Image (cartoon, rainbow, N blue to C red):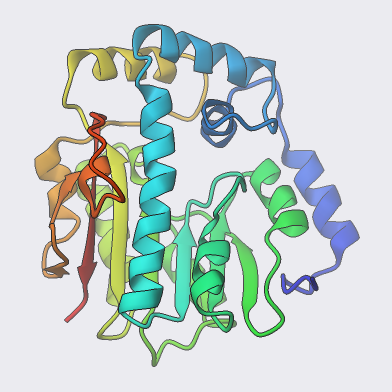
Length: 273
């Protein structure tokens, strides 16, 4: 299967990413990879992952449920809403059923742009985030806070006259201020055409154990992750038309079966009028 990623000089990209890779400090993408059973992590990541699990074992369920929500949301958007363009911000490390795989399974012509600024994520993206012959998969090395730069790069691949699904799963906790986080999301949504969608999930401060586990995580040296209240998470969708069932705990967004799993995180999908 041919690689439809960016045509930048691969040697220069590899050298630049290698110079930025720090394996001595835990990183959220690698810790998340560890919880999902992946192998793209290092001893500091596993140590922090085990520390958090000791306080809050359900974090593994939360990671898996977030990945499952991605699959359900992308399938809904591609199969039921006819979306053919996806902007996935805060990609994380490739595992299974990534956004492009789910979308192109439904619509081989789908175009997907991934956004991240972690060197390990980007190096894996180059190798693994390939596309169908008919579609496009590429990545952007940008900070999600720089909405203008993200959109400018995304325009090279995506047609901003047609609907785009903005995917932001488990990423906005890296922005400490709720007001700043809302501004980041609104800045990205504002650039999307009418008929586009926002799909989000995030950890929420809905139990003492999850609050304590994230306190310990934030003291580990990793980039901090700030839990939101459900009210703050809901505010991300202001001005948008929520898709049923609205903003609900992650496992309850259009579940594939009747299995009852409780996680401290909420999800939602909404359409831009």
